[in-house]
Image (cartoon, rainbow, N blue to C red; front, side):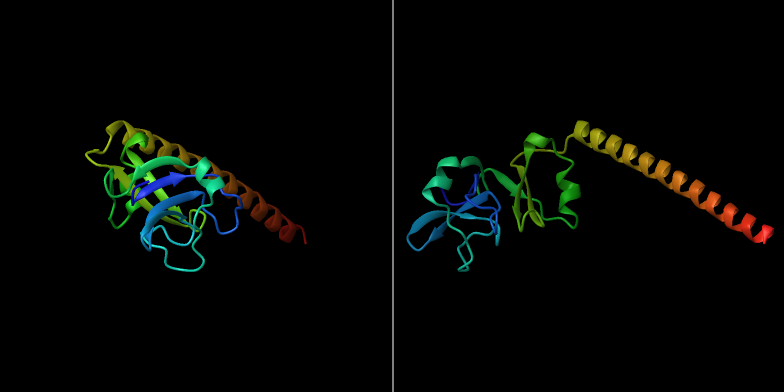
Length: 154
């Protein structure tokens, strides 16, 4: 284990556990701590969970956050991150994915194929939203017509 290594592991429980760990210095030793409370580089609260031996046996190395990747520090980091091919990007999550740090492999460049796929998916999603809005509009028009007919017959 090296400082900054990120592992995916099987937590013995899900409460306050992310299933992702970062290797940090804890006194004079290195430990793997779950990223649920903080994906940062130190054990900084009594709530931080240091992986048990059983959990460490399930741990699979993902990357080293100091040597293998660059963190995306943009106004909209996820949007920037999504420009890269899936095998060139990584995430470190906290709070069951509510907080996310986005990374790309060192040397990776945005992928035009990935951006085309993302744009195609965005178009499909927008088209589905238009269909849904049209359906909703038709229902509201029918409802309005029924109320106006009731008033006319009253």
